[in-house]
Length: 281
Image 1 (cartoon, one colour):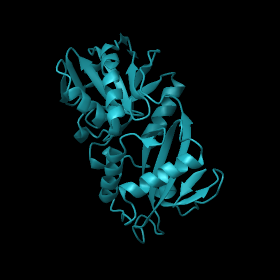
Image 2: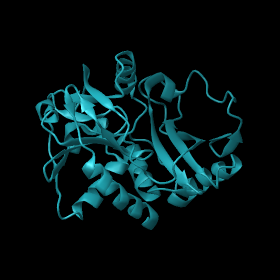
Image 3: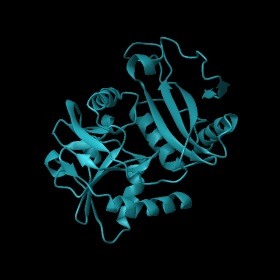
Image 4: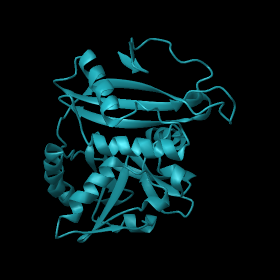
């Protein structure tokens, strides 16, 4: 079952038409949420990112779109799908609901919520081989729009197909300045000695929720020095570790890039601290 503007519909329901602006122009935003035992992890951060993104895209925010209202809608769907005692992946999609061409006739919005069951209520380190490569067919444009979790993810789609065709587990995206920005499905962190780097938002990386949580964790680790700095592709093969972060998997270590094999010591060290943060949130 899904939630469309507050109505619970069957998954196979045909409730969107050819005028949908999310389909026609990618005129929408989404949040990917992890819900454990009917609790939304990092919900306030997700909510305020969504509100900020809607303002940037000049969408009208309905009066009822409060933190409490959307949380209630999400949890209601979780219970409808009988997922309240397990772990679920939820997608909250907001799109401009108006006729028009590039110029919408108004800035009203609609929303869709969907939920599926997943494993692992807590974050664990997957130590299996995980190889990445640079995706250089197309580049990320540095700028504010690139930091939004919008429906415009075509570079992630094409990059994922490229990775599959070439038997890579993931790819790293680069921007017009040829700096590493992020992975196809999350932010990237590089470890060299006691320095941990992640690209700054100004480079065009997604303003990730897990990125924010992990940066907060790392700032409290005395033996690590956290830096928000651009990462050159030349740094990758000199790194001790590389890992990807997102809300669903937490931390995913990269084990190989070209001929370079990476350690996973730092990732193992901080995963416990991340889980503590989850329990306290």
